[in-house]
Length: 249
Ligand code: ADP
Ligand code: MG
Image 1: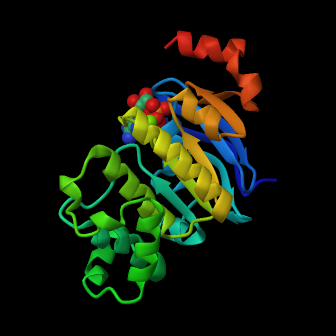
Image 2: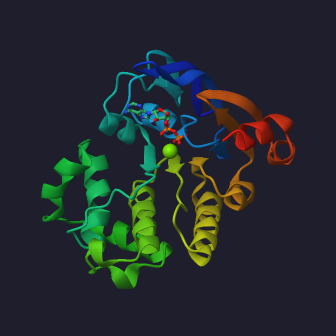
């Protein structure tokens, strides 16, 4: 059994079955990619994993403990951090202030919104935040206001905001969406380095197959809310069911 086990998860939005009997097993210290056409339910699945959505049925177990029924900040404290499809950073704050928010949120078991108050009285979190900014190559931008940064830098900042929490499981929702080629390559290298150095388990949703095949050891293909195939990358590439799901998009 993996560090994360999803069993028989269903989620409906009115008449739409967004997730239908989803099973997923993510082994510790691996990178597991979830791919599939638009609307397949990938983001919905991630929302269930982080407690933003409650499934209609099924179970989600992380490190032997059920995730269901817990608040997002509690799940975050259990060791799950998530990079959003659209960067969720605080535009009016500087890079360094942004970095401190997840530090306080994790320490105090609070929502990120509530951690803003603590940021103004920072303390010993700064060294940790600086170390992580250095790792993603943004230390020189620490006093920049987040809203003034490039798209790639916003994404790097968001990733650093997750990594500074030292999660055991990092969930990434299309981390390279909208990135230029060079930024995408940098992100692949960053994620590889993080895995090698910190041994963080990753589940990644990604459209860019170059990213998927560079990082993932296992791939689950989701279509219309249901896993079609789960296998190693080499077996996914020419899989007829996968081609069908994508061509049918
Ligand atoms: P993906 O991330 O794979 O592109 P999503 O998980 O975002 O897909 O969406 C799966 C399906 O559920 C889509 O048809 C989408 O329109 C629908 N959906 C997602 N979130 C909601 C919501 N909050 N209310 C109603 N429908 C939703
Ligand atoms: Mg999505």
